[in-house]
Image 1 (tube, rainbow, N blue to C red):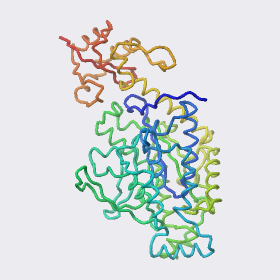
Image 2 (image 1 turned 135 degrees about the vertical axis):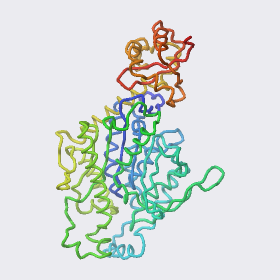
Image 3 (image 1 turned 180 degrees about the vertical axis):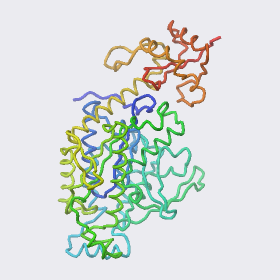
Image 4 (image 1 turned 60 degrees about the vertical axis):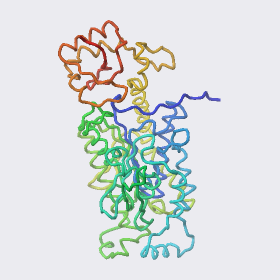
Length: 501
């Protein structure tokens, strides 16, 4: 019987690490099964490194999802009664297999498809009742501010004709976005012609109206939400957020990004100009067993985001920090967003498993096809990703005053046993840090930054720097309050509160 694991620590701020970690999941209806298989593989690798209680929310600073990806995002980050993720990644595939046939009921009637097409001309193909009830029961009264890590979920407000981004980072500036996760998920999944639009309002604790939303599927704005997530983080850095100090807005090499697609049928080439040139409203809404208009704007959005990010990371010589996993060879039934026969759902699981074995690829915007550009498989790349994520989490815990503050306050060095995790001693850190303190001008930065509660702001200037050095050099550690990570690779810089006169 395996030993009981200690409680999981929340992911510490990026300021204490080397990277900003982002997970992004595209929209795509029932094809969300494909990234669910990939997520299960990644979480399993993390569990091999850090124990069976490891969850994806323990490792990513941001998890972003659109439409079906938004629902997965909520499942990975919403807390249960033990304040742990409501779903493990391994449970998400089974969730799709169990509930999709009721969300998108399949009619074996040979005229069933024709009936849905006719219905789609006067209203959505599905009433959304089961989806709404399921999501509301699943997420209850959980609000955006309660997620276990930051989330970014794009939607589109049909009344204001502009995207609405439900972002954890925006809550301080815009409390009206602190909606129920269930409402956000229903809104971002309301694909035109498939499911009805969703309207709701947010209120403050006194019942005063904060915001009113009239939402449709976020895929009309950002079916691939990776760039939206990166933009949200960049705004935080630009705004001087203490969570990211001293990372600069242009340091994209510090981002570690995993972007998961839900597959596409582009390789099948089922549409062409000669056929579409004669389409009217009916043709664009229902042709070749699909909805061409939806296929066009979701696929173009996803590919352009991948193209921009791939180019950006390559230009910054950080190509290894961006991994896009997508399969553009779907054809036939598995390309559908709403076909829920048992066979098709199981085939989608197989597509995800086979995708893990395929080489890492990137989109060629000239041909539109994903082409192998790396000698390793997606599976091998994810194993590498898991190791980086685990190392980054551990690094932050070693450097974070929230984890080590008490021992450092007492002037103690960690024991060299298994529980200490080989944390560096304070005496080893001092020689690396103090000689460069004045040159780094960290003293100028401290008074004007808001640090976490465990950090005391102290103005160290001019000759005072040498006084600090002397006090610490003689191990007068009782005056030390905590430690912050410097921006130049130095292990620790100590912030003190003491009388320097």
